[in-house]
Image 1 (cartoon, rainbow, N blue to C red):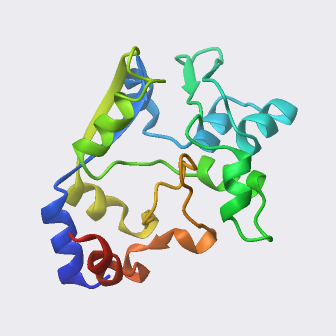
Image 2 (cartoon, rainbow, N blue to C red):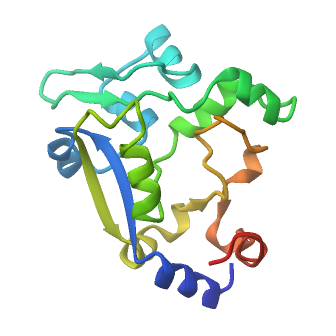
Image 3 (spheres, helix red, strand yellow):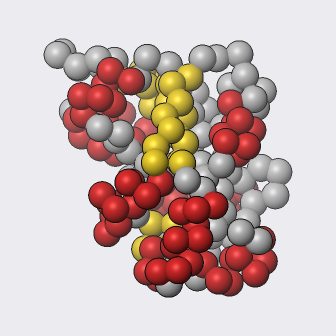
Length: 186
């Protein structure tokens, strides 16, 4: 992505949104917004329990606790399943590989419309959530080298999964913004 394309993205999406489990804010303030894998590290979750959380689909939210820490909740992965992943992943990437990759990341919605589609989905509409709204420019300036972009909803395989692989996530400077803009608009 060229500098002017990044500026266009920031202008078009001045804020980013993240949906967290209700009552997560205190922990986020104390430890930062953490990926599932980073939460499991912080809470000392190991062994079979960790493998099940990180490498298999979660059909429910999973609370985790540790003395001295606020309870955390690992979110479900209802919009995704192994059957859909097997249709779109290359043979060298297993569903377990994909879950592990996703669990190493923190995700943001670029628009409030996309966020509200998630909060209004049947599985989540009757629940309260902590919604974080972050300034896109400030986030990019602070974490430029750690940010990767993905042109699809990488955590969804329903109803029609998009093809995906490890190259679905690219650093900002490698992201083909012009290509995706030509297909989808700004």
